[in-house]
Image 1 (cartoon, rainbow over the protein chains, first blue to last red):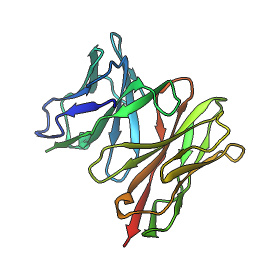
Image 2: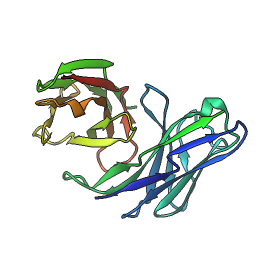
Image 3: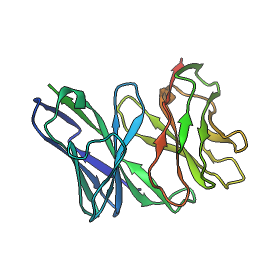
Image 4: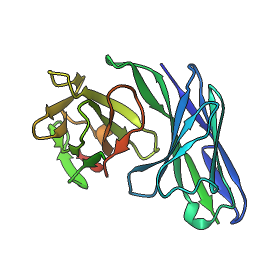
Length: 119
Length: 115
């Protein structure tokens, strides 16, 4: 089946540094990927939609200069948290549109997530 | 705008019993899809079941079934014969039907199965 990977799975960094998170579709091509953020005991909040070869579409309230998204190929999207601060500590999950199941044309496949801790 | 509401923050169920997790939604779209995902403590999002708004029959996937009541805008998840491994967070979600574009999630229900 369709698999999405994320790297790294865990990252701890000092305040003020930038952190890059990779999201890869391993066995399918994904023209669209999504980035979510999840704070402890809360739901997933969509941050942005990443489209291959074009600029990402950010949800309201998400700072595009803070969270840089690059979707340079059909199998890779990256999220860079620039000048990270403790309040950016969260669980970041990506998903990718891929081949459908259960009668649907397409579906979303989620990565395993990346836990970011900013000290 | 689309909205998903899960009113049960937590539930405790005895092993082998059936459990229903509630989900209501609000949308002005004519076509949409409804999902349920399971999130164990590891954090991964596990797809459980899908229901299209025009599907006449309720979706079923093994022990999971979706009780879809379109007029009431509800999409409750029913887990039959619960197992200890079912303990996790469960999220109801919605997306436009035409393709798997962005998914909006509910606040989730933490299900705990008692042995």
